[in-house]
Amino acid sequence: MPALERLAARRLQQQAAPALFLLAILAMSISLAWQLAQALALLDAPLPPAPAPAAPVASSTPSPYLAQLFGPAPEALQRVTATDLQLSLLASFMHQQPEQSAAFIAAQGGKARRVTVGDEITPGVQLTAVFKDHVLLRRAGGTQSLHFARSGRAPSLTAVPPPYADGHTHASLPGFSAYDTPSLP
Image (cartoon, rainbow, N blue to C red; front, side):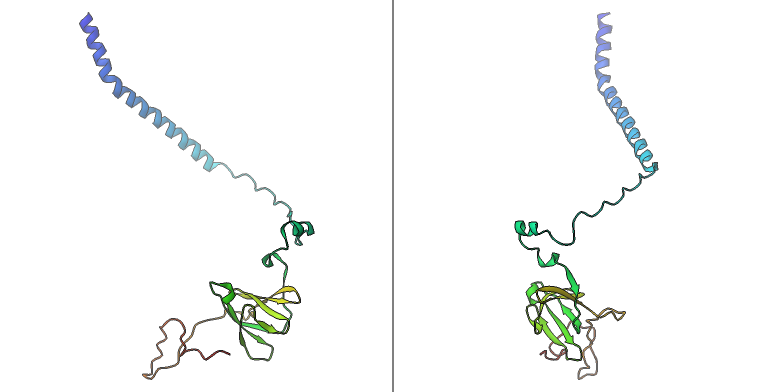
């Protein structure tokens, strides 16, 4: 009998590793099936109602106590109103360095002129910032905005050069050149 017991013990040792491996695979399969069932139940469940929007806490005017603590609000956070000046924004040219940005602005009935950031447009009105769809002006200590006129179409910066000596326009060439644009004031 001792030989039979040794044979049984050896056979048990040989089959223990594959049996544990199969048991582990069975446990992982059951876990995966359970997770899949929970995920499907979550997808089928109705969504909870959205919470009501909270009332705004911040006021539109900064507190004087905050100004004492942190200093005055930056220009971007100050109230900006649309200008009532008789000016027209004709083009805006943004530069990577904001102080080198420029715009073409015309006074009512006047000729358009190129103005860079910091330049005075009319007495007491200074260009302070240029954006793709508007510019900011400083007037009487306040900030005002000047937008493009709403004509139903966006301003276009596409240029078609005049015909060259060979009669072709070469309009497929990108950008502007000194030949294509007149000298600016």
